[in-house]
Image (cartoon, rainbow, N blue to C red):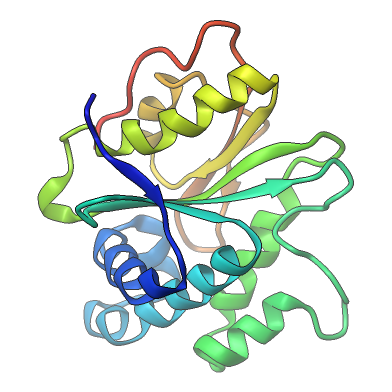
Length: 211
């Protein structure tokens, strides 16, 4: 569809953080982690920065050439429990909470809960986050970013996984071949997240995702 995409580097960090911060301000899960508009506006970007740092170091960030959309991917081996779950006494979730917002237990909890539903036993590509600038949503940028990776997954016979944060997202991801996997994750006193798995297709990723 003519969208130019490149792999982001460390020099793109601030752009990625700003993009994710803007794209997820109204997301139901972000609203649960950081309740209240003012609180979210002043704090949410720290979590986006922490996620960006992890993926720039350990995964890959795809970004459109015009900087209007990005996708954060991790390649997960079959023996990985998901989300980098490590040492129980001082794991990455606790460290992220201390770095982002020490008094906010939900920063840590969201990582633990999503790690708990992450599939294990089979290698896959994990779409950690995808963000499209609010003024550019509906232009097919999300389709282009995700589709380029899913096409590779199809060629290599590799599965893909994500967690959708709204029922609308579930419907859109289904168009790309993802299906819900197990029961939705109900965040305590909060919204649901839907784990979604995609088996590789022999003929490409098919229909597109809006946004």
